[in-house]
Image 1: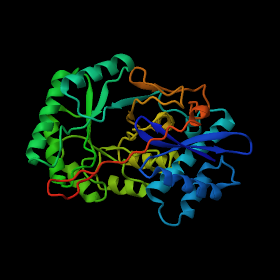
Image 2: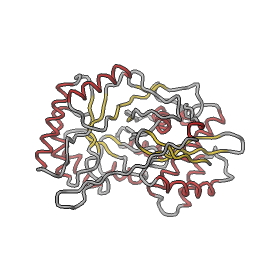
Image 3: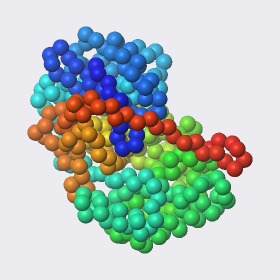
Image 4: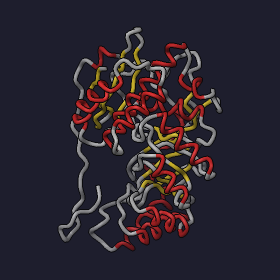
Length: 373
């Protein structure tokens, strides 16, 4: 195994290559929860647990890694297992000279619809221009913004709600009426009633969805939230195991499920989560503010998933992937003639250390107490 500390945009990434004694290698990517350097000894530990196994027994090997943990492995453990899981899927596909999605029962769709993450709240005229350019170049018609226009904590909450609603109204007025806009609240709201006020204030302008307004831990709050909202409620990026997703789904606490394939333990676990969602009539829209390798993993998941809705997509140039999946007419085209994940990883570029340290900022309320990152 070889792990590379790299970057995508201004965020760090850990890329992993798993090698076999047959000369076939596969690639995966670990999610950047924060302490990225902690992944390297963890990956080394997991390598010792899988050495000598047949990499084409993907389910067996990943289950071995999960069960040897004894206790649920949590964020870093599952991120590392996700990278290994994806490398094993690619090794298997390359050994058979097929795309990964061919191993999953084949494609259920011809191409993968995407929406573009903007990850800010640009002025309405700027939002109009940004979305118009992205539509002109890539055919995109759906975008995700932040509802916040300033600090959440230094003024009356009602003003924050009004400011967000007025902003969305102005974006709708300025931008092409054909576009869809989603809003990501980034789990910064503690009180469910405040999330309800904000979501319903956005409702008259028909958001595509309202994403993760509150923390994920207390499932009954999500059931209450969904029952009171008049907009579609999306969440899932902060959950890890199929059991957690089952609790959320069983409570009726979500309209659109957003698991992250690099967070939950990889494609093997992602498929379980998608099946649970399907039994609850809930579509899956994977969380993916990632780079070209994680996007490739998602493309193959989406190609074979019958209740997939759309994929989050982020534009970031990298030195190490010369042939990323790029949107065409608002979709990512499948690559049936390319075995494995369908992208090339340039190891010569990876040899140059391009790692960047990054930490989340933690807001402080006016009284000196801590808010949520």
